[in-house]
Structures are given as C-alpha cells and as structure tokens.
Length: 242
Image 1 (cartoon, rainbow, N blue to C red):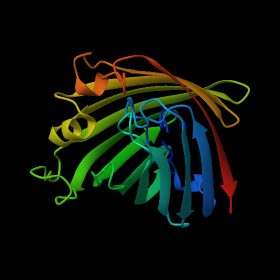
Image 2: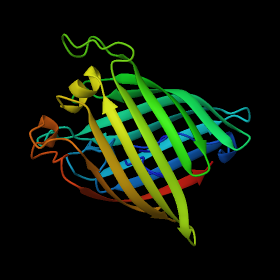
Image 3: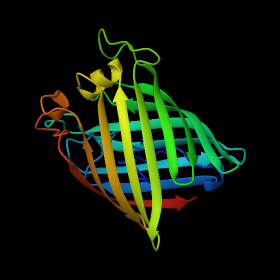
Image 4: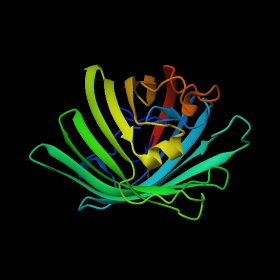
C-alpha cells in the first residue's frame, strides 16, 4: 500500500518502496497514521510540521491492487492548508522467493501546491532487501507556465533493507537517489541529490533518522525546509481490515 512511514522508508506515499507480495493483502484495508514531519524522499512536505494521513486499498486474488492515500502538506511557511491526494494501481506477486511490484501512481495537489504529476514504478525484492525505480510519467502541462515535463524527465531509485532484530522490532535501512529536470523544479533544487534513512518500528510506532547530501545553498535547504539537516521523525500507524 502507499503510505509515505512504513517498512523501511515510506515516511509520511510514497518514501521508500511500494514493493509487496500479493499474499500480504486481505482484500479491502484502510490505514491511518500521524507523524511529526511528512518526509518524502528525504524532503519535508510540511515545512517540518505534523501530518495526519490515511488511505484505502483493495487487492484482488490475482495480484492486482488499487488504492488511494491522502495527507496534509505545506510548501511555504505562510501556507494555511494544502493537501496531497494520491491514486494508484498496480500488480504484485512472488515467484520462487522473489517478489515483484509494478504500477502507476498519480499525485494530486490542490491549487496552492499546483503541481500534479504521475509516476510509473517497478520493484523487486528478496528476503528483506528490495529495489524500486520510479520514473516520471507525465505532469499537468497547464498548471505551471513553461514547465511541461514529459516521460522520464525525473527518476528516483530506492534501495531498502528490513530486518527483524528482536521480538517483533524491525530495523529499516534506506538509500535513494533523485534526479532529473522535473525533480529539480518540483523540489526546489538545482541538481540531483541522495537521501538516506534508518528506522526502528514496532507495533505501529516508528522512529526514523533521515538526511540528504544536498548543499546548504540549495533553495530546498532554506530556513522553512532545512532539508540539508538530519531530521528525527516519529509516527504511529494503524492498519484496519475492512
């Protein structure tokens, strides 16, 4: 399911991997979470403020799944309220111990954020390790003048590893690389960057430490964002069988 602090590094939809096996679904499920900071690919989506998030998912026996996910967002210190609403469809399964997941993910924002876009993704996993590649599919051309980005104008590669260390407590490790013209326009960057995270999760609670390698001179590292600093994220998530 898309839930941006879930195993390994989805902090806040989509910071880690959507990778999962078809057997992990129980047809209709819901999820609700609260976090002190919505982090997506190493970057705050709420100017380091709290977020309430939730989603609905439906999976078919054959591996096909559909879902939706929503969160509050804030991209400027003086924003009153904005939202992100995601829609996705994909196909996941497992063969001889290797899991796979492919799909389409659409990010919808209100007029304040004003930058809807979509990605296609493909991931594979074995044991606790997974790798997922996200590729920009398209943007809404009429939203921002002179910024019509086509297929492949940005990519994000996520490498994740999850390990149970004791009594149901999971250690998550993540590294990612985000690059491309759209990635720079959307995130307020002038060049590509890498992000990382280490998380500990148990019974819905997750504590994560995240960071990036961006330079302090980047617009995305301005005082409202501080994306060049190490951040500490605490969240709680509940999954509901419907």
